[in-house]
Length: 189
Ligand SMILES: [Zn+2]
Image 1: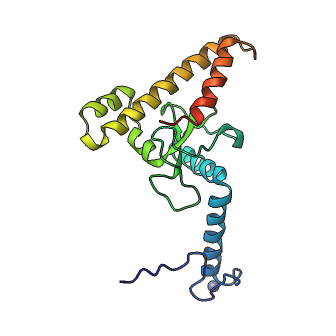
Image 2 (image 1 turned 90 degrees about the vertical axis):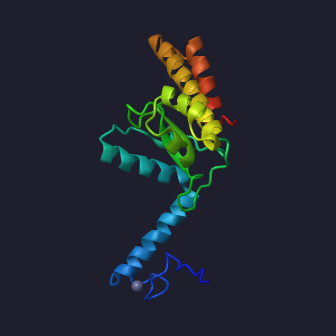
Image 3 (image 1 turned 120 degrees about the vertical axis):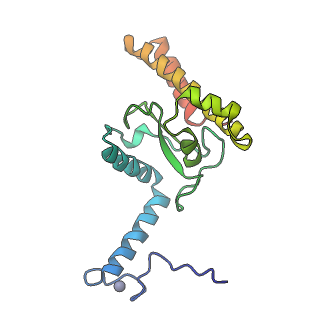
Protein backbone atom coordinates (compact mmCIF):
# COMPACT_ATOMS: atom_id res chain seq x y z
CA UNK A 1 0.00 0.00 0.00
CA UNK A 2 1.27 3.41 -0.88
CA UNK A 3 0.11 6.30 1.28
CA UNK A 4 2.54 8.74 -0.28
CA UNK A 5 0.92 12.02 -1.20
CA UNK A 6 3.06 14.63 -2.93
CA UNK A 7 3.40 17.89 -1.01
CA UNK A 8 1.32 20.32 -3.09
CA UNK A 9 3.56 23.24 -2.15
CA UNK A 10 6.60 21.58 -3.77
CA UNK A 11 7.50 21.70 -7.47
CA UNK A 12 7.87 18.17 -8.95
CA UNK A 13 10.95 19.37 -10.88
CA UNK A 14 12.64 21.84 -8.57
CA UNK A 15 11.46 20.92 -5.09
CA UNK A 16 11.30 24.27 -3.29
CA UNK A 17 9.41 26.48 -5.75
CA UNK A 18 12.18 29.00 -6.33
CA UNK A 19 11.98 29.24 -10.15
CA UNK A 20 8.57 30.87 -10.34
CA UNK A 21 9.45 33.24 -13.18
CA UNK A 22 10.49 30.40 -15.50
CA UNK A 23 8.60 27.35 -14.22
CA UNK A 24 4.78 27.27 -14.18
CA UNK A 25 4.88 24.25 -11.85
CA UNK A 26 6.94 26.24 -9.35
CA UNK A 27 4.44 29.05 -9.62
CA UNK A 28 1.46 26.73 -9.06
CA UNK A 29 3.21 25.03 -6.12
CA UNK A 30 3.98 28.41 -4.59
CA UNK A 31 0.37 29.54 -4.93
CA UNK A 32 -0.94 26.33 -3.36
CA UNK A 33 1.44 26.75 -0.43
CA UNK A 34 0.43 30.37 -0.07
CA UNK A 35 -3.31 29.60 -0.09
CA UNK A 36 -2.82 26.82 2.40
CA UNK A 37 -1.03 29.19 4.74
CA UNK A 38 -3.86 31.73 4.42
CA UNK A 39 -6.45 29.04 5.13
CA UNK A 40 -4.64 28.27 8.34
CA UNK A 41 -3.77 31.74 9.60
CA UNK A 42 -6.63 33.82 8.20
CA UNK A 43 -9.72 31.61 8.00
CA UNK A 44 -12.03 34.63 7.77
CA UNK A 45 -10.42 35.68 4.50
CA UNK A 46 -10.90 32.20 3.08
CA UNK A 47 -14.57 32.12 4.05
CA UNK A 48 -15.23 35.60 2.64
CA UNK A 49 -13.30 34.87 -0.54
CA UNK A 50 -15.35 31.74 -1.18
CA UNK A 51 -18.56 33.64 -0.52
CA UNK A 52 -17.52 36.48 -2.84
CA UNK A 53 -16.88 34.04 -5.67
CA UNK A 54 -20.14 32.20 -5.06
CA UNK A 55 -22.04 35.50 -4.98
CA UNK A 56 -20.55 36.55 -8.31
CA UNK A 57 -21.27 33.16 -9.87
CA UNK A 58 -24.87 33.07 -8.66
CA UNK A 59 -25.60 36.76 -9.17
CA UNK A 60 -26.21 37.61 -5.50
CA UNK A 61 -25.24 40.89 -3.85
CA UNK A 62 -22.10 40.74 -1.71
CA UNK A 63 -21.37 43.51 0.81
CA UNK A 64 -19.65 41.62 3.63
CA UNK A 65 -16.67 42.90 5.53
CA UNK A 66 -14.41 41.07 7.94
CA UNK A 67 -16.34 42.29 11.01
CA UNK A 68 -19.63 40.97 9.65
CA UNK A 69 -18.71 37.36 10.28
CA UNK A 70 -17.69 35.56 13.46
CA UNK A 71 -15.92 32.23 13.36
CA UNK A 72 -17.10 30.08 16.28
CA UNK A 73 -15.16 27.10 17.64
CA UNK A 74 -18.15 24.85 17.04
CA UNK A 75 -20.86 24.66 14.41
CA UNK A 76 -23.80 26.64 15.84
CA UNK A 77 -26.18 24.11 14.23
CA UNK A 78 -24.70 20.69 14.98
CA UNK A 79 -22.24 21.47 17.76
CA UNK A 80 -19.33 19.73 16.00
CA UNK A 81 -15.90 21.41 16.29
CA UNK A 82 -15.12 23.44 13.18
CA UNK A 83 -11.85 22.59 11.48
CA UNK A 84 -10.04 25.46 9.85
CA UNK A 85 -6.91 25.43 7.73
CA UNK A 86 -7.42 21.97 6.34
CA UNK A 87 -8.76 20.65 3.09
CA UNK A 88 -12.52 20.82 2.67
CA UNK A 89 -14.46 18.48 4.96
CA UNK A 90 -17.93 18.29 6.55
CA UNK A 91 -16.39 20.11 9.55
CA UNK A 92 -15.08 23.01 7.47
CA UNK A 93 -16.59 26.40 8.25
CA UNK A 94 -19.06 27.50 5.64
CA UNK A 95 -21.08 30.67 5.23
CA UNK A 96 -24.82 30.07 5.33
CA UNK A 97 -27.22 32.56 3.81
CA UNK A 98 -29.96 32.54 6.43
CA UNK A 99 -32.54 33.56 3.84
CA UNK A 100 -31.38 31.81 0.65
CA UNK A 101 -33.34 34.32 -1.42
CA UNK A 102 -31.05 37.10 -0.22
CA UNK A 103 -27.39 37.74 -0.81
CA UNK A 104 -24.20 37.77 1.21
CA UNK A 105 -25.09 40.86 3.18
CA UNK A 106 -24.62 41.73 6.87
CA UNK A 107 -27.33 40.11 8.98
CA UNK A 108 -28.06 37.37 6.45
CA UNK A 109 -25.02 35.19 7.04
CA UNK A 110 -23.87 32.78 9.72
CA UNK A 111 -20.72 30.63 9.86
CA UNK A 112 -21.79 27.01 10.29
CA UNK A 113 -20.28 23.67 9.30
CA UNK A 114 -20.24 22.55 5.71
CA UNK A 115 -22.24 19.52 6.83
CA UNK A 116 -25.04 21.62 8.34
CA UNK A 117 -25.03 23.90 5.32
CA UNK A 118 -25.47 20.95 2.96
CA UNK A 119 -28.30 19.53 5.10
CA UNK A 120 -30.06 22.88 4.92
CA UNK A 121 -29.37 23.53 1.24
CA UNK A 122 -32.06 25.76 -0.21
CA UNK A 123 -34.82 23.98 1.69
CA UNK A 124 -37.63 25.80 3.43
CA UNK A 125 -38.25 25.33 7.14
CA UNK A 126 -41.35 23.21 6.44
CA UNK A 127 -39.27 20.80 4.32
CA UNK A 128 -36.57 20.54 6.96
CA UNK A 129 -39.20 19.85 9.62
CA UNK A 130 -40.67 17.13 7.50
CA UNK A 131 -37.18 15.60 6.95
CA UNK A 132 -36.70 15.59 10.71
CA UNK A 133 -39.85 13.48 11.05
CA UNK A 134 -39.81 11.31 7.94
CA UNK A 135 -36.26 11.50 6.60
CA UNK A 136 -33.60 8.80 6.96
CA UNK A 137 -33.60 7.71 10.60
CA UNK A 138 -29.90 8.40 11.09
CA UNK A 139 -30.32 12.00 9.98
CA UNK A 140 -33.51 13.02 11.74
CA UNK A 141 -31.75 14.49 14.78
CA UNK A 142 -29.53 16.54 12.48
CA UNK A 143 -32.50 17.88 10.55
CA UNK A 144 -34.12 18.71 13.87
CA UNK A 145 -31.04 20.76 14.76
CA UNK A 146 -31.18 22.51 11.38
CA UNK A 147 -34.88 23.30 11.93
CA UNK A 148 -34.13 24.75 15.38
CA UNK A 149 -31.36 26.85 13.85
CA UNK A 150 -33.67 28.19 11.12
CA UNK A 151 -36.38 28.98 13.67
CA UNK A 152 -34.12 30.99 15.93
CA UNK A 153 -32.54 32.86 13.01
CA UNK A 154 -36.03 33.69 11.71
CA UNK A 155 -36.86 35.08 15.15
CA UNK A 156 -33.77 37.28 15.03
CA UNK A 157 -34.79 38.59 11.60
CA UNK A 158 -38.16 39.58 13.08
CA UNK A 159 -36.57 41.31 16.05
CA UNK A 160 -34.22 43.21 13.72
CA UNK A 161 -37.17 44.36 11.63
CA UNK A 162 -38.85 45.71 14.75
CA UNK A 163 -35.62 47.44 15.78
CA UNK A 164 -35.29 49.01 12.32
CA UNK A 165 -38.66 50.71 12.65
CA UNK A 166 -37.19 53.00 15.28
CA UNK A 167 -33.43 52.96 14.91
CA UNK A 168 -31.89 54.10 18.21
CA UNK A 169 -29.20 52.24 20.15
CA UNK A 170 -31.43 52.13 23.27
CA UNK A 171 -34.42 50.76 21.37
CA UNK A 172 -35.28 47.64 23.40
CA UNK A 173 -35.69 45.64 20.19
CA UNK A 174 -32.17 46.63 19.19
CA UNK A 175 -30.87 45.55 22.59
CA UNK A 176 -32.57 42.17 22.17
CA UNK A 177 -31.28 41.86 18.59
CA UNK A 178 -27.70 42.50 19.73
CA UNK A 179 -28.06 39.99 22.54
CA UNK A 180 -29.46 37.30 20.25
CA UNK A 181 -26.80 37.99 17.64
CA UNK A 182 -24.07 37.36 20.21
CA UNK A 183 -25.79 34.21 21.46
CA UNK A 184 -26.45 32.75 18.02
CA UNK A 185 -22.92 33.26 16.76
CA UNK A 186 -21.69 30.70 19.23
CA UNK A 187 -24.87 28.83 19.95
CA UNK A 188 -24.16 25.21 20.63
CA UNK A 189 -26.53 22.29 20.94
ZN1 LIG B 1 9.69 24.30 -10.79
